[in-house]
Length: 352
Image (cartoon, rainbow, N blue to C red; front, top):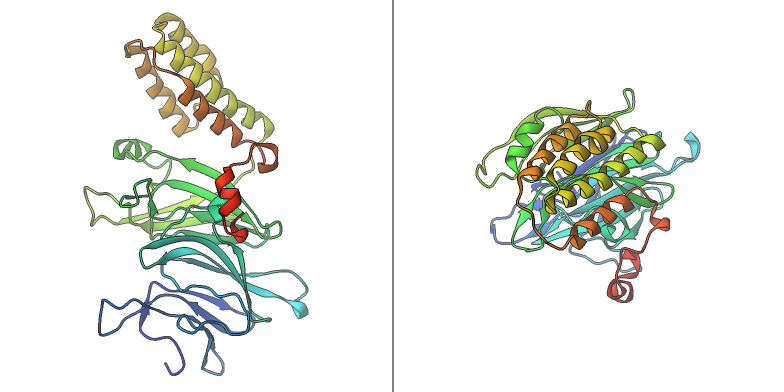
């Protein structure tokens, strides 16, 4: 269309229903030369007037001192109301992550529609307890709570040439400007996910995620499981998610389960089979929620440790992992800093 974006894909669109306007950002432009990587900027489309306006160009830098944002593909974009009455509404757009060239991004931007102002909220959200850099992470808004839930996308492993998907969830508080990781499942084994069945969705990317204010639920559909054995596989499953704040007794039970599981494993490692078996049945089993399928499966797998050969392996790495798990129950201000000294000295100011 005249004045609008070219022929693009992997872009994002949001609509301001009050103003009857569409906002389109990012995406890769299809050109006659497929080698060229041309990215589309930020556009506004006024529905009633049928008029396009270019708000930010990827090829032309800002000359008035405004914050620049690099165009990208596979990002997340949401529109929300920053507060105020109907006559003083301040609609804003959040833009998170994505990919540009071969780089996965973990930055966070906010665009003030009325002020036509772009603000960089974070250079690297992962350094603020937020999502790691990823491609096609998905985000959904709970306007009543003022929260954005983000699910994992395709991420790089420690080896940058390798990619993976994991089941991680984060919550971003719009008022406090804070991130919190609320769920993580590091399992990547296909047999494990087959056993999980209808208990938990397989890790994936390029899926869809939305929120229903009426039912107070998040809904997720489809995606790519990134199965190296079956690269053409695509998912068509449909899931509902309800977020419930855990009660103190539930948090205590989870902490005890983590501690007692580690103690049981160490007993098995020392060859204390009879004591370990009794401890598994009474102490560990006493804090397992057997109506929770995932906990039930994990509890059943623990019995395999009874048949392992005793070893004198150092338990420090496992205990350190337990400590990290327990720290997830504490607020960021109540635990040790996650950044090391090098990150603190040399990281971009926006990312600290």
